[in-house]
Every structure is written in structure tokens, then in C-alpha cells.
Length: 459
Ligand code: TRP
Image 1: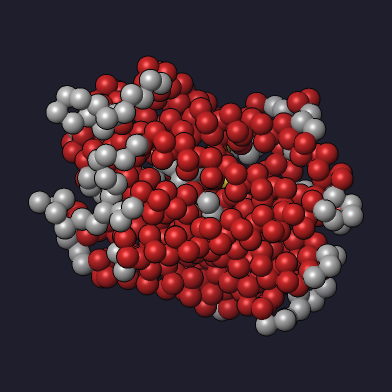
Image 2: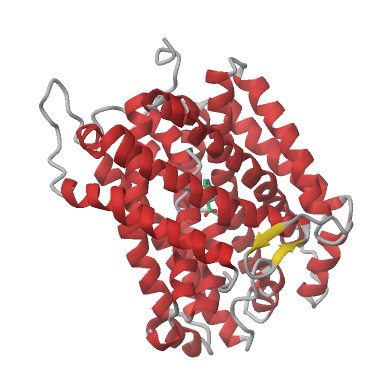
């Protein structure tokens, strides 16, 4: 039996830290504050909050239930619910593969910044130019990329409870403390008032349908949904643990970290008279200038990038774990071999992503109804592929499989930890959750697709 040789979380707190470690990543600390900036501040945060606790909570609970019920990797899990739906797991593994290929490139950039700050190096006064020069170098970012992946592989090879759990137990609380220190420093800066007002006085006049949808996409990415990662983590979880409480805790932690990072990043950007929300490279281009303008800026800069590295690492581990669990259980590979082969392929894809940042004019392709075919840089089209297509599609499929194929009744019985017909937990929200997983969540995801592919509204 496959179940016998499978790892299990040594403790429930280990599981929570690992799952929260997966959720908290570059998405929270680097992407979220930028989206808050672009989306109008406090109003965006309120909308995001509602979406996490209505939609994100619903889908995450479904993924945990499938994983724990089937006790298998994502592919085996969906297949054992219905043969024809095994592709949902494959889709997830594929999405994870692509996400980690580029996620580890960005993780490598973070390592470079850690290195620069820790060695007392200089960003040359103009961080934007420094960043551009660095990512346009054909060789150096690749070295950092490989270094990031190598660390990820080493941890994953050690196995679930020994590797991931032990590392998460140390990294997550450390991350949390560092972020709070950073936030306290930020909100007490002399000119923090404008940023604080932006965050604390919601202005709903700036809310548009597209901002709502941006918030939805950001929430799913940030909660690590749609790729079978949470399904895989759930499969290592003890039957008697309370899934609802765990899901709620993870959603709370992830959102708390995102909000704290918004408070850590936005006030200093305002204080330095910077503009918020410069998109993807914001954390690399604008922030160093902000640190320079701070007392003890070098120290805070170093702390920030170390923290971002931890966050990226625990997320990277979770994605690789999804792939490795699949290769071990479905393709019968050794754990070590699976991790190394997966990483080697990721180096190949990641290198293309990295080179397309400036060293080589590599192009990908994308399609929207409004603009037809377009040929954005390869890096950008890889992100579009995962964020706008594979992750929402994976989440939609998991709603359908859980809500309709497996049936929310069976899922509810798993969530209640039913043994011999008697449930361990009440889960009194069950009817509400069933409606959300069957109707509300799928409808909202389909809306993202329509808007994303129409191209009339940009994310
Ligand atoms: N949630 C992580 C972040 O915010 C990234 C991540 C890890 C992820 N695992 C995932 C995203 C699975 C989607 C699916 O950075």
C-alpha cells in the first residue's frame, strides 16, 4: 500500500507552519503591497480580506479534504475520486513546475540582494539601474537561480517531517518577527502619515470590477491554491485533526503577513515620495532607495531581503514537494532522483525566464480577444500562463471535482473527521460551504477567465 510508506506531519503545529510557509511567499511580501498601491489602498485590502475568507477558505478546505481523504499525491488523489479527473492533478503538477521554474529565479534575485546587503556592498545609489544591470547579465542571475533551487532540493530530499517541518518551524516564526520589526520601523518614520492614511482610510470610489478580480487572482496565488500543493500537504495530515480550524488559521496567517507587509512597505514608499505599485520589480527597484533614506537602512535592507528569502524558500519547497510526491508515487522514482530531475528541468525553463529579462530578446506568446495574439517577453508570458490560466483553471477543477463529482456530502464527512458514522467535529457551516464550493466559487473563477481573456480589462 502506498499509504504505508508515506510521511506524516509529526505534529499539527508543524503542518500549520508548513502550509502557512507555502502560502506566505514572494506573493505576500513583494506582490501584495504593489497591488494594494495600484488598487487604491485600504479599499483594496478590505475587498481582498473578504475574498480570502469567502472564496480562498472554501477552496483551500476542499483541497485539504481531497488530500487527506485519498492520502495520495495530487494526481493520484483526483484520479482516485474519478478516473477521468486525474488530469486535474497533472495540471497542478505542470503549473507547479512552471511556477517554481521562475519563482526560483526571483528567489535567486533575493539571494543576490541578501548578499549585497550582508557584504556591505552598494547598490550604486540608483537601485533601478542596479537591478536592470543585474538581471540583464546573462550569467550571474543563473548562478543564484541554481543556488536557490539547490537549497530547495536539499530540504525536500530530507522528506516531509524531517525536512520541511523542521525548517518551517524555525523559519516561519523568524519571518513573522522580522516583518513586525520592519513594520514598526516603517510606520514610525517621520513622513509615514500619508502612507498610513492611504492604507487606513478606504476610498471606495476607486474600486472597479477589475480590481475585484485582481484581488481574487492575488488571493488564490497567495494561498497556494489551484496546483494541488495544499492537497499534497493535506495528504500528510492525521485524520483526527480539525481541517476547518487549520484552514482558518492558515488563511489568517497568510493574510496577516500580507497586511503587515503592506504596512511595512507602503508608508516608507510614500515617505520617500516614491510612487506605489510599480509592478513586478517593485521590491527590487524602489525599495533599496527607501532603505537608503532610512536610518540604519543597510540593516533594515539586509533584514528585509533575508526575510523575503525565507518566505520564497518555504513556498518553493511546497511546490517542489507537490512535484516530487507525484514522481515518487506515480512514476515510482526515488525521492532524491525525482527532486534532482525536477530541479534540472526547472533550471532549463528558469534559465529562459532569466535570460528573457534583458540578456536575450526571448519572446513568448499570449492571446486576448481584444488584441489577438501578442508576443510579450518569455518571462511575462510564463507568468500569464500560470496566474491567468493554470491556477484559476486548477482551482475551478477542484471546485467541480469536490462539489459535484465527489460530492460535497462526502467532502463534508471527511471535513468532520467521520469515523464509523460518527463525526468528530460539527462543522455547522457545512451547508454554506457546500453552496460556496458548488456555485459561488466556480462562478467567480469563470468570471476571471472571461475578463482575463477578453483583454478589455487588464490585471
Ligand atoms: N503562495 C506563494 C506566494 O504567495 C506561492 C506559492 C507557493 C504558490 N505554492 C503555490 C502559488 C501553489 C500557487 C500555487 O508566494
